[in-house]
Image (cartoon, rainbow, N blue to C red; front, side, top):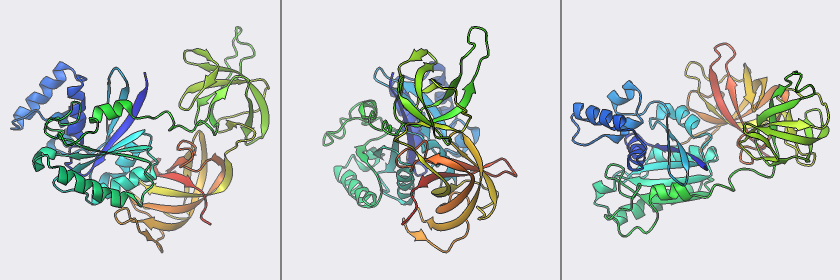
Length: 418
C-alpha cells in the first residue's frame, strides 16, 4: 500500500493535535479503550466535549499544559493509503523539533486560526516548510465554526497568505476551510460551507499525487554496510547494503563507485522479500557487482555519466539546535552526511535569516538555538552530495558536538553563491 508522510504545523492552539485526533477518530483508526481513556480525561478536566487532541499529546506535561512539546507520531490507514503523521510543536522555542518532524515528509499541513489569520508563526513555519523542500502544502483555515463559516474570512486569509508565499519556494499549495473540533471538511464534507467546492482534507491526503516527488533521474546509493557472510553455501557472496537515495538501479546497469572512480555492472539486487530486478528511491536493498572492488561504508554508487558533487568546501543553510552552546566558527565538530562521518569546521556565518521578515542579517558571527543561517564549512574528507533542492537525502547533514555527543545542527547543502 502506498504511504504518505505528512506533518501538521502552526501556532500554539491552532488545533493541530485536535485535527489529527479528528482524522484518527472519524477514520475509525483508534481503539475503543483509547477512546474511553480520552473521554475519561476530558471529563476529569471539566470539558463538555471529547478532547481529541489527547490522542497525540502523549506526554503528561503536554496534557497538563494543553500544548504539544515534542513531535508526536501517529499511524493510520484507509483503503487507499497508509499515513505517518508528525504532530509538530507550535511554540517558537521548539522550532528545532518542528524542523526534525517536517524534514522528511511528503506533505505539510499548516493550520491557521480563522479568528486571527496569518500571524508570525504562520509565516515562520511556512518559511521552514519552504526551506525543507516539502513538495506539497495544505493551508487549513481552522475554527471556521467560530467565525460563522464566513466565506469572506476564508478568502481574505487565503489572499493574505498567497501574498506572503509569493516570496517563498512553494510548489503545490491547497487551501481548505475546516473545523477540526466539529469535523467540518476533515473526513466528511461540511454542510455548513456549501460555498466551498474543494475536497475534504482526508480526500486530498488520499489522492495527492506524489509519484513525481522522488528524484528518479540522479542515481545515488550511499553504501551503509558491506555484507560478506563467509558461509559454505555463500562462499563468494559480497553485497553492498544501503538505501537508494535517488534514481532507479536495475540489474545490468553500468555503475561507478565514488570516490575511487572504479566502474562495474550490477549483477543482482537483493531485497527483504528476495531478489528484485530494480530498486527505487527509499528502498533498502543489497547491490551485487560483477567485479570485486574495494568499497567501504560512506562510498557511493552512481552512474558514470551522472555523478554527485565532490568537495570539502561546502555552503549550506544551517539550523542550530544546541541549547547549551551557540555555533562557534573555527570549532571542530563531527558531520554526518548520508552514511559518511567526517570532521568539519564552520568557517563563516554569511548571514542569519530572520524567519519572521525573510530579511538577511549580515555581520553576525554565531547562531544560537533555533536560529538559521547560511554558512561555509570545510570538512576533513570530501563529501559526495547534491544540492538539497535536487536531492533531499544527499543534500542534508547533521553536525554533532564531539564534546557532548549532542546533535548541534542540521543543514541543507546549497550551490555556492556567485
